[in-house]
Image (tube, rainbow, N blue to C red; front, side, top):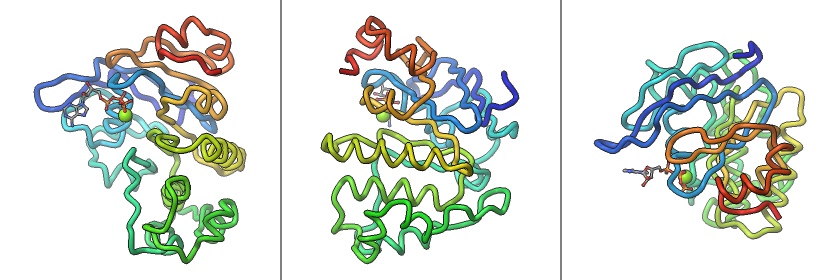
Length: 243
Ligand SMILES: Nc1ncnc2c1ncn2[C@@H]1O[C@H](COP(=O)(O)OP(=O)(O)OP(=O)(O)O)[C@@H](O)[C@H]1O
Ligand SMILES: [Mg+2]
């Protein structure tokens, strides 16, 4: 594996109780890049990032973050080690304000970095700045999604794990989230990103590399540019075209 990999996953296996779901996944996220984890419903995308985060009930294999083995650690220790996780269920608190969500989550990164302060986040996410006093239950779905991404950034992670940030959102908001992720990841101190997506067009817009899962195994890996041109693979492995 290249030495610039922030995340190296090898032979990752796991599942729920008696049901094996992941059958030996190898993937890596290079330093400073966004990798999209794609595939149809039920192929194991969320399970893969849950296993990386240490919350899949059964799991084995190696997960290394900047060369440090995570396998013996629980999810809280993995978060402290630099994994920022945004689950599918957004988990916004209805009676906390936007600012409070960020302030409560904020902590220095593993290197002591405090690059993503609540103030900087509200600057970079102008919607959140404008809505800083709004309660969680007053936010739209798109605003909630932006808030949970900002909240994960406020922990100053090395790697951000995003599970379907566009799910259930209107196309105009999806475009805003793509634009925002592009701006964040262009910052020199941005974390690398592993992005689970069903929305292929969004994934190809924000990621440099793609990994496609079929039945808990890696069926394809390649650059976003390559997958953009492979309509046959888009159709056969993901079931949709980017158009
Ligand atoms: N809590 C659970 N208990 C048992 N089986 C589960 C559980 N969650 C998911 N599964 C099963 O594990 C397999 C992989 O699910 P997973 O949620 O990882 O897929 P996914 O690729 O994220 O799908 P989606 O696009 O629908 O989010 C599926 O067969 C699913 O039914
Ligand atoms: Mg999922």
